[in-house]
Length: 557
Image (cartoon, rainbow, N blue to C red; front, side, top):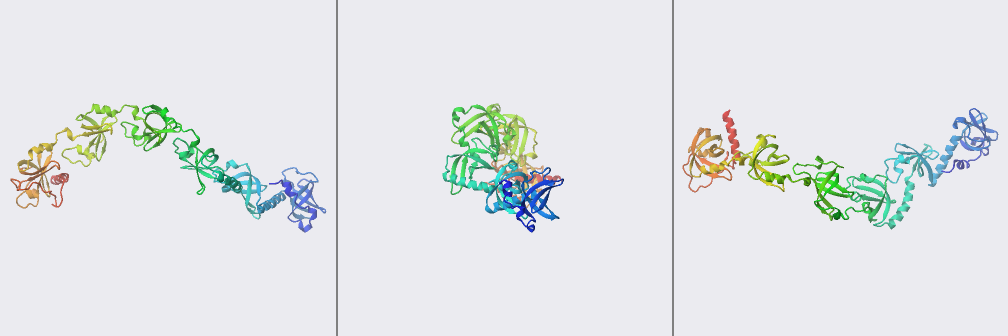
């Protein structure tokens, strides 16, 4: 903004104006002197104006004879009242109006932050919207307070006393010139200093002279970067290199790590498989932990390499970010830039010891640590568990829900079936502690021969009878009597001993068919029909045994 006096010098002297023209007019008047409450100015033609002393907060800043701009307001008798401060403001408003009309720029100082932007002092107060402070959006306006800047007036309303200015317009004009020169000469490999304008989850946008380029998170540093704000901050000035430039799409790819030493250079000379080194945990993921061996050089400890015995669902169960740990190098792949690390292999594999101490057929006792739908996990040694599959719990009973028969913490005797050291699995059995009763039943239940059995359960479609302990066969309702039978209870009862003909013995399906009406197998018949309660579908032994229990409960009632 030009000096105020330069603006005021353009104002006509009061002596050149007629009486009626003095009202609300800025004139050049000569300072005469002062009294207790006023400063006196000579308007010429024996006319004087009084200006209140409190406009100056003390002594008059003028010397007698100085020509001063005064706003003549109204006449009171032989004198006029006026204002020097209002004259200054109005002169500035007139000048700013001419600046706005001509499109010139204007200087001002940013004085305060307010809702939506900043206040600017240009002799009068103007408003600088937040969106017009910079070329890009800013979150913090405080660094601009007290700064002298150049602005363009974008709105001017003298009646409402409203002036809106823009710094962005000035920057855009300057940038456009620089930008055009940069576009014409931009090429991959060039180094530029840029300003970080915006940070996202996938990188940062950097202004290198009017053109925004993307510095992707993978090009910020050689090491893993989980959050771009760990490397750069908004407003940072950083050096970048042009990786890719597509002017037709206005896409600019930038890199920062390419200006730094590549830590993978010579990595095979510094590190070897089986080597034990120190590292720092830099990131935790569901599948493992990333460990920094040196700046920019990281390896992965897969979740399976954290412990020989513990079930690790997330590495955070045993590791923390920034924790310093020892690791063993498993592999180095310079092409894929991957280093495999292990924590558990710093110690001896306990499964090797377990395999030596518990060979197959070893009997042992241990607590149940967990129960699932498919079996029981039994602790063999601290941290080492074996599985008793549901199919290895009982020879004769179909176990649908193991939790109905066992409790966590219960001590059980088991036998080792097999151990897989590589997969870290041990299969245990409970039923194998005893001989398979079906092997004994096979000696007794010979198709075509009779055997003494005991009725154990009645159902709507027949009766179950025990041949040997734990093994039962089915006497279908049609095989109970030569006469039509409506209910099995008409012929037999639980606990009754009878002699039955073995019609079929199937050890694979574990089914035995019996008959009370026959003395020998029908000629040419080699298979037992699949009996069911509605005689329309096959019935498994498990289904029939379930019906047996229900029938027994009903009879006990």
